[in-house]
Amino acid sequence: MLTKRKETEKYHAGIRPLSRLSRLLKCDSSDNLCNVFRESFYPLLFASITGLLTGLFLSGFSSYLTDYPGILVLIPGAIAMRGNIFASMGSRLGTAIHTGELTIPFTKSRSFVKAVKLSLVQTIILSFYLGILTYLVSLWFLPNRMSMEEYVTISVVAGLISGFFLLIFTVFIVYTGYGKEWDVDNVSVPLITAMGDIITVPSVFLSAWLTVSMGKTGSGIFFYIFVIVIIYLLTGIMRVGTTSKFHDIKRALNHSIPILSMCGIFSIITGTILSKSLDSLIVFSAILFVIPSINEEAGNSGGIVASRLSSALFIGDENLSLKPGKFTKDIMKGLVFSNFIAFNIMFMVSGIITGILNFGTPGIMEMYVIILMGGMISTTSGMIVAYYLNHISFRKGLDPDNIVIPLITSFMDILGTLTIVLIMLVMI
Image (cartoon, rainbow, N blue to C red; front, side):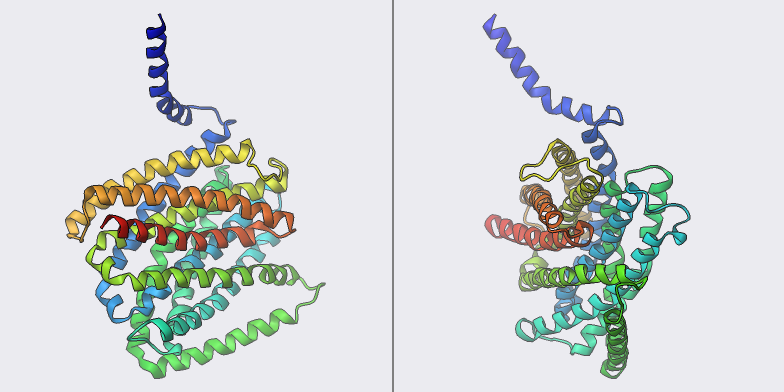
């Protein structure tokens, strides 16, 4: 009898993970864990696959990166900045939907107009800033460096190109989610950052090609035009008073610009790590191929936690506590299941593509360990960090939508890249 009971316990223990997965796939709409899994899985899977497209660009242009290594330093910052700005915009609009501030038509909503203007100003100022940072890093660490004017021109032009398309895409996602009664917080961050990857990397290479083609004189002209625009924007912001209709934008900029500037430093560090590991990553180009996708998943997972928790705190569904409550735990559990499945699919898809394109690989099992272990460590860390950053910012009276998502996505780029590089060094 005892033996039979033990066998029964072993059986139930063995099927428990399957039962949990079944629960996620078959549940009612009131189950938060189920909703997080169902609404976030496909956006996260989409983000991981599109992240591979980013990696494909990086691996395909490896010879160009060898000639101009500063481009690789700039790319993580450009990707992160586009994702930070427009994912925050999506999160901000998602919160406005929950609180009833955003209604159809969007163009007549003050929250919408403010979010669009804020994103455009952030794009111009921070793209200029990233170009300066890239130049400063190149002075110390890189051979074959470009001039400051060239780096700034590449960064701002790429920012304007990608920002235009991402603005349209962000509005489309929020509008569609609003009409279909989705929880925008579950889908906006992964979809917007994924599209940011797809658009930004080609935009950077196109901008770099245009800048190199027009020479130092042409880039110098654009540089001084951008300087004038930056001065105009900054003086305009400084002159805004407390009674002005632009005061909310000034307040958001005061909160977000320092944070996004810090994120730019994080992203430039990520690019520097990649550029210093470029020789190994070119030999094992399959690893360079998957790095953007893994970082994408980590940033998105943290971004979803931050976005959902921000809305929940504002409407009272979650309370501040050092220990996550059931609401937050359900979100994290749903994301863990989503990421585990997504990383396995990523491994299979990347294996097929690297085989077809003959990318250098350390081996099948090594790639599986790099993707699954590196991915799960990064995504889990991202969710935990996002929770406590949200906790701190809300306690300090700061808007988490302006702070947490930018910080978490940029920080996870560093952590994810370091994790993968360390696993690569240990295994190879």
